[in-house]
Length: 217
Image 1: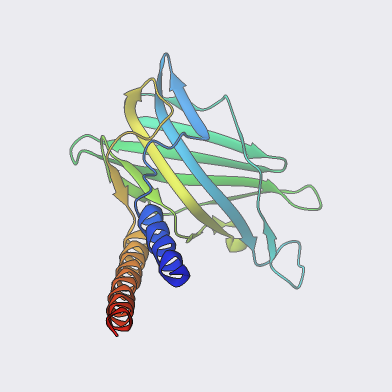
Image 2: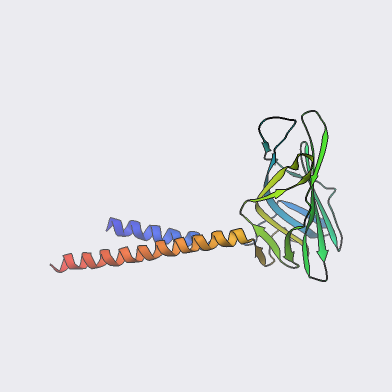
């Protein structure tokens, strides 16, 4: 009986974990236009620079970003600025009324080397395109290469962004546009959970049959 109880707890835990709703997550970064928010964003970053002041090993840092009040928004463009000591990140978002979409048109990164020299890097192509009245989400790691000084790479993860959707709430309440990497991961996880649940059911049936046969003897 102890085995059956243990099996029941495992199966119940899998069902609960697989049904957790992560909707309406509050944004860490927000740009406000009057009483409404024109941009909400969440993300973690790791910056990797292959040639940092001519050192042998690539330099890596995980900045602790602080939101900059100089961020601005209007009907077609949003600028979100965040800072972390010698690191300054500026997101330029653009809205396309014809296609009914918006994206991060450019990301600018300004930073200072060990010798106090200023460097600038930037993305060449738009990132994270999504339909208006939706928000983009990607928990998986995404490495984005920047042009300019040192050809650095910025790794984004747990990324979520919503723009051009006037709302007085800091929560992501619009429909979610999930990245392909997350969809692949979610499908793999769902298949794994389904297989485990089927095994749980199969083992439970076998144990039940064996237990009944022993009782009938």
